[in-house]
Length: 430
Image (tube, rainbow, N blue to C red; front, side, top):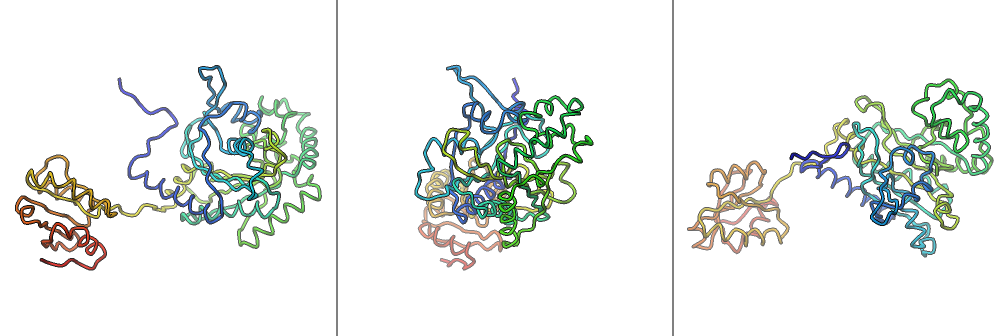
């Protein structure tokens, strides 16, 4: 029986995995500079966590979750997003009592959503995200946005566009909610069944509908910006002031909603301009979610965060021709001739590797010519050639693959002489 990979998943092979390592290293380094600490949560959680945290009117909860029963009959779900698990941990571990506040966390890991696979969108995908919990300062909003923008820029992306909006505080959202219901209710039967269900539960989600996006009522729907109270207006103005002070360009888009129920006040998306990226141009999204901690059973705690897909980032880098991976080279390839020399190889390789050198050898019993071809294919910077005679004399030939120069050195001097060669200082002839 032949097995194939499940639809919507992928194997990341050598040649591509190095790109992932570079991106993950950038995430770790950037978060270190912004003083965010890594958190790792389980791949599956109680289903109710996402129903309450993400929102039961969202497409994620209604259509996309991988839900299953364990042997004890408990309903569990593969995590479709990272914020709810982080907030669950924040509550369960009582992080609100930590000395250092706000609590600034970041994560990277696989998420799972059952949706139609397409370019840059998988059923198993990897997110990098940050969450800042415990502060309602608009400066934190600006910091989170700045971190996301800097991540893309430092990896070499250009033509980025930051879109921001305010969804308002609880009072503003309620006023807007009533206006939306009054606007859509007379003709709600013209909308899809999902929108009809959302009318009372969360009419703001109607604005994010992909089915009815062209309906005429969408064009003149009440704008949240018209219903912001003075506190919400002042908060949004401060966020913009901080972004401007940091030299971060942005556009205000009153139609930006975000697809999760827990957002309020600041919401933002980072998009990419340019051809070749398809219809979906959003790279990252996030916003403030004051109230989510309480919904999950914790104390009143403000929070803000963002998440981005590594797959979509890689797609954007490819479209813009950004090559993250430099040519991979071996420092040294060991060629052996004869049984005694071959038995000596593991000891030599172990010594070289412990000294930090990338070293390899032939394990297929090939002739010297074939071994040399293997060294060339693996772009080895140098080659050690060890035969029976050299071993008897306690020596080994070292060849500089760039210049072709080959000299004889003592076996005990291999590491020191190789480091000289690789640093460009040359080696001493015997």
